[in-house]
Length: 294
Image (tube, rainbow, N blue to C red; front, side):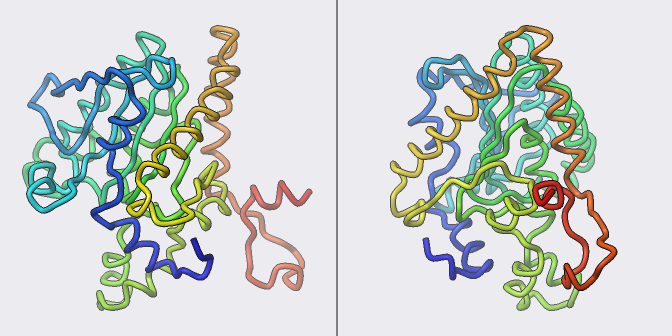
């Protein structure tokens, strides 16, 4: 893809309904997938796909946001916006992964968690928070790949992982550019300006040390879906092999995995103030960048 694409152009590509969705990745990458339903408390949520299967010879647990390719499918899947029961289903599957020692793979593609009254009444914020807590201490390798939109807590609830991968034309942010423009300038038409200011692209997030790898899209994913899915599979296999090597020594390895996960997230958001402003005219430097410079 041309590096000259603006942040807003990448937002539009991330939202293209023809991009491969979670169910497409599962169909091509996860052999013998068995979908599991329900949160054992309220019901099932079709916006959150989850189950078990085999990924290139490994038994894995898979969760992911489920969008549709057309309006009818999006209505059936609530446009990929899970309700609390969806996140609690994901939590049940995370616990299943830990109990049986199975790596967890998450596909992220959501504009955000469902914000309706019913979801709030059933504890949307608590459901997301419980997932964040569980993911922080899950004693198995975890991988997340942002394949389209990564919107706010709705994305974080399944993506606090040991490795976060991101397609070149995916986005990952605390809010949508439209929401940001409305909050900051009371003008939704400034969404393209907000997208650039928010630094939502894969290249931005890799530069900040949030994303561990950007998976190239030589052409947009919706134009070459099969090739894109295979590239994602190759990247997942490579990172999973590295994590499996780390946990090979039983509890000692798992403790090392958890320690590395803790440090990964402690580094995010740390800044180093430079005493000589002429060296860094743009102000503070992210700590991971400062560490690399030393």
